[in-house]
Length: 187
Image (tube, rainbow, N blue to C red; front, side, top):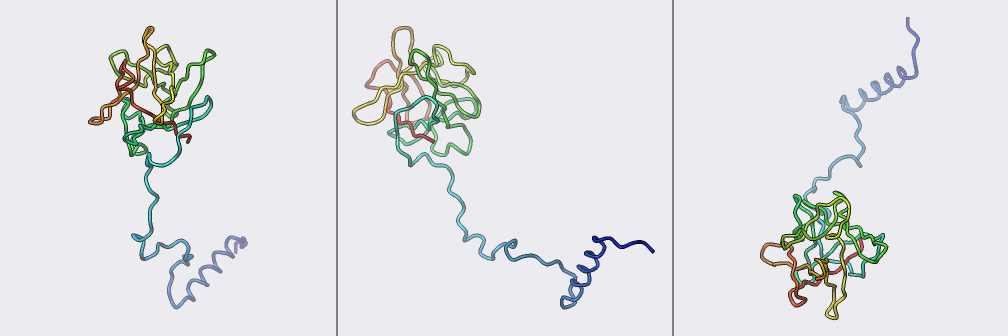
């Protein structure tokens, strides 16, 4: 005859207790682990939205959502391309970490991919470089009407970040009148 262990005693007690429950051999399930009958009525968390939050001046060491003032859409890196999105969390990176060079230029690095926001040299903006270069140096200028303009340098000319509302792509313009207004929402 083998010696009984504490596990054997527990198993026998559990089996005998279970078999005495109205002739069933089921396993006890606590009520907090079962699904309610009205599962569809339980609200799910809302998906990320670019609405909400208050814009502020970007500071080195902080992370921001860069939001277009007119559309409320965020600058998002999606599939390797910069686009404006309202539903940025579904497919893309929208968190931009700010850093500052010793001479005052700001850089914005997308926190998941580690690439920097900057000019692409073809009339648009990109986020492809893993270390900031000349085209990733940005100047932020506040506007009286609210928000800021974002400028990148091209030789001795400042190129402003702008957008076309039809496709959500970002492009550069050398006129302040066509520059988009942006706000930096700390996340």
